[in-house]
Length: 392
Ligand code: APR
Ligand code: PHB
Image (cartoon, rainbow, N blue to C red; front, side, top):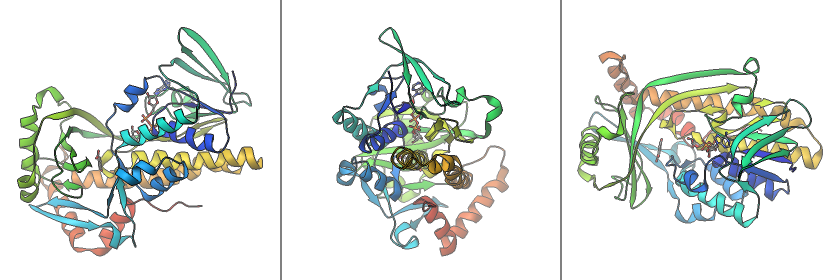
């Protein structure tokens, strides 16, 4: 078998890349180790930067996002019993974000791929990458009890942090940077109305909390929890009680509780692998970098990588130019590191660090107090939250 671009992973990065390539007439095949149902079952943040929303439109999959997505022109920081709004629209000259769950975005991309009759192999086992340091890369995978080999021009490693692509790169060719945070996020999904019209990020001495949403009738909440905590220790009632303690009084009063649809704990880490290209293998999305979810940058960084890679591949096939492919890694990493910095900063500002001591909490309160009163500080936060402009 042969294709032009072999894509490993059918998460947001792989599906969005596949959609952009298919629309550009570039043949591609996606191999995914899980089932489509399993991929859709993942609950992930969906705060889309304007450039991500624009890319979905370019990919022809933005219609439902425009119909059902929630335009948010600000968010609130809760600390010291009060809420302080960050006015994105005013501070960024008219920009906003769109709240649209990653599950829905993934569903839209799957539907579009099915409509285009582009090939996706789900439940593929033993995926391996070969000869990507040469001119004739190949991948192998098992499906339906048969081993398949796919010759291709390029391999896009869109298989996430635990994928096989980055693991296939010789260790000596890779430099990784990692910071694991001393806490996790306990998340709960419920069919209850959100506590506020916009997201509320809370810094409390008991720990961080976030009140988010998926729609006007479906809420998503998070509580900072200990690394050794376990979801079985948290009844719904215990979750709601702790959330009330950490939110400001007005939000706590407005909280509508109900049965959890999903409850899980996720670790937080900052991770970057450099470079993001190895011969004819290109890493994109979580395969190359992980950010703590505080700044909601994971999906947006995956989209930014895919935007850059798709343009470079179109340039290669349409104009026989290698410039975009040669610049891919450096161009992506400049954006990755800025988003990693913002995500680290926002995480450090909002969470209770076990070894931070009382002074750590006091210093956070001082920075939050400064933020609340400084348009300059709010502008820096706002322009990073809505997404920095692309360079070139
Ligand atoms: N072979 C084939 N597929 C694989 C393999 C493998 N060896 N390993 C992992 N995969 C698949 C996973 O099952 C998953 O569906 O690759 C896909 C990777 O998807 P994501 O982990 O969602 O990563 P990405 O597409 O880069 O999207 C980033 O997802 O994790 C969130 O916060 C992150 O919002 C961000 C977004
Ligand atoms: C979410 O809704 O899952 C979410 C929103 C904003 C964040 C993180 C997660 O910063």
